[in-house]
Image 1 (cartoon, rainbow, N blue to C red):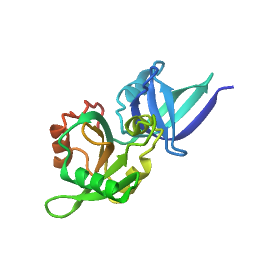
Image 2 (image 1 turned 90 degrees about the horizontal axis):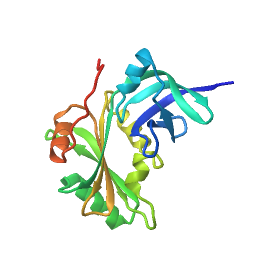
Image 3 (image 1 turned 60 degrees about the horizontal axis):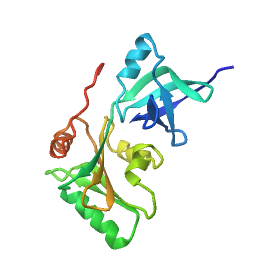
Image 4 (image 1 turned 45 degrees about the vertical axis):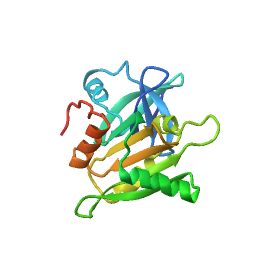
Length: 205
């Protein structure tokens, strides 16, 4: 008998080791791979339109340990962008890293503000850990979920966001920058500064 599960998922991007999408189940913050090669018709179009960061309500069918979509409904078109080798970090990121270093903590964050002193996002600095751990990869694969940080932003901004995860070239930190409003001047500036073009999207409302 085929098993199905329904939940809300955050799309993380292409699975790193096999074909399919990597998603994070928001019910338990567990990452899982969903095969995408057998969707048909309207479902295939919806699955093909998914981009990293999208929040979806979906039903998955399980067969021999593999999951596939049987229904997908896009709830919020937040965008999630990963970039390694970033240089020339913005001041708030540098200050946040300095705070983490001074206080000897693994992660710390602070809000950011626009020129009118209105909050427009939040930046977090995750210190690299001893041993073989790669914080950037752990966030990329959902092993270290940043969903609670996005949830905190959702309390203040009801629309879709843009989330940037940077592996700086000259610092032993991973930077997560949550921009409150997608397609905003701030999001555009971050993308232009760090050469992170917005992905092409289809079927936008």
